[in-house]
Length: 115
Length: 117
Image (tube, rainbow over all chains, first blue to last red; front, side, top):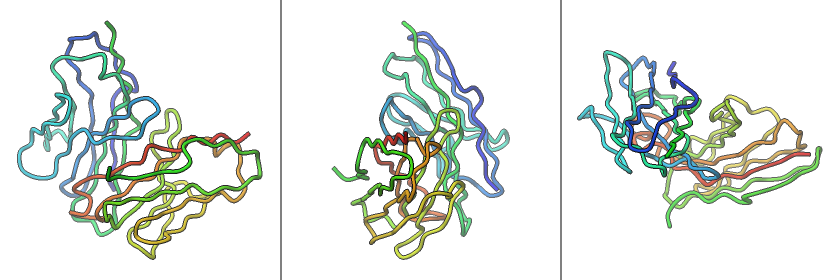
């Protein structure tokens, strides 16, 4: 069975600082991995995804994430935070060859950006 | 714009009332889902429809029913609303239900904020 753990329900950074949001997953088969962003009072928007190939994936708004199989991690980073990055971020995993699967979401990490 | 459309955006119900949340997608996706989002709980799957003509229970189905009306539309019904069903409800769709059908992830609607008093 697949699962996702997001470390830290809230992460606070200053504008211009590095953003690091942590995600660890468990999956019995090679996973697909996703990061979604949710701005206040909106739906979830796909930020980036890893399916196959290059383990460092780039997404919208300057975010990127690296799939590390040995660490079962898919941490989200951005070199320099902007005020507009304040939102809730969700990591999700699906199994690539399961005959019966849905996306499993983490509980989310709220990113707070201070001036 | 292509995507997932949910109606209504906001709703207040009295305990015991019924209502149907509507969802439609125009991306020719096969699979559709209903989630609820509550503070600190993340997203919890209520029901899903892997393909037209099929529906199945998710993690928290009690108190809800669904109908996959056609390939585009997937509705969620609350037969007798309870305060515990106060939540934000999201509909989502994907190309398929497993394997490469999930490689694009989900596309989400903008949500329905439901308050049951």
